[in-house]
Length: 489
Image (cartoon, rainbow, N blue to C red; front, side, top):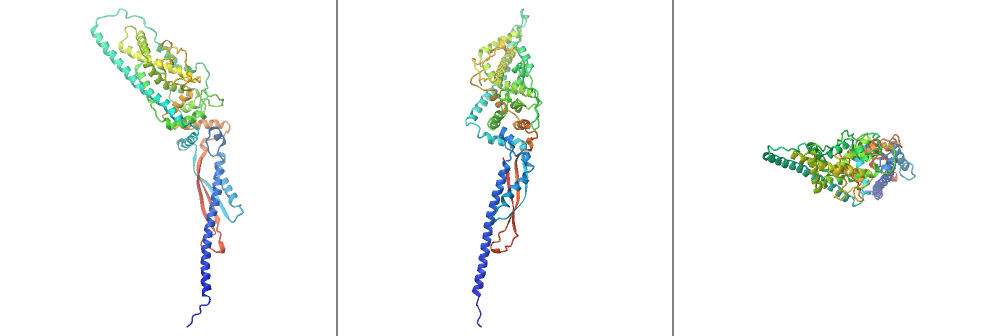
């Protein structure tokens, strides 16, 4: 039986053609979707750039910190969707899009994460504003201050040793001269210069340093930082026990580390916030860096607290200088003997000698801070030619001042105090207090905890299938996906 095979080639070629058409249609569809998604991606990225452009202008202009304007955040979702729609749905090409809603999620505000968001931006900014050799110079300042602080321990040990030796000497002498009486026991004692000096200290650090100059006594509105309620007390140079406690606290203060880690924040604070010696005029808080250090709600208290801390920071280097001067040590011994009288107990005389030396070093530190507060500089390490105060002028802090042409300034010591803070995150919260207070003077509704620095943007998108060659492929009319990106400053 003969088979009729007419038309079989035609059917075979038609089938092959359909297969090729299907393959071409699928490839064309894939290319179409790839290009379409690329175009949509460009439109979405442009929308995100638009979002970043709506930062809080006053925050950037004053402090170079970027965050989304809270006024824009309320309409950001609608605005992003609108920008993407205008770019995609109203285009005149062959792509047909349907743009859904936009959602902002995983929001991070400037006051979140324990101040880390603000800290990150400050570090990024200061990368480009710090000179290359700045770190080494600050390390040198801090290391020399810290080395002087380590000597405080040896001063305490020397005081104890001298007292012990004097005690042993007294006991030996008493055995030899047990019945002997000194007819000059009633010899008149000289006035102790420590008494007048301590009366000045009790008046407080602000009058001690500033005299009768007027200082700001305004209030600091604390919203984010932790208020410091501690009270600084004047040093006691009459009692050994009190003095040892004060020396121990000074040793702890100068033993801090972290100048490298904190340098960006320190330099940012000195550059963008006002302090006592700043020249520019401004309304509101005057002693801003002082608040970053002290955290009190009173301007005057912040200034006073910084003065005490600055005196404490100068004290170790001055104490080392005093103890290296044989003439001052000898003079202190003579004064100690004279103020306690001829019958002064040797151990007490030995202790009084050390207390006088320490009082002189502390008084010199007060004079140094007076120079700093007037915008002058002081040498980091003193010598005989740069020393200012004598025992004769200790009671009234009277001396001829010798400000240095080369040395450290008031701002330099503010920087050292910022670096030495125990709770290093507090400075960032206190920055937020200052930033908010200053911007609210121009923008009354400003709240730094409503300034968005990071969020996740999710937009629902659809693109209509091409259906090349009129073929119906085994999926719906639209291809859907989500565009998701994190926006951050």
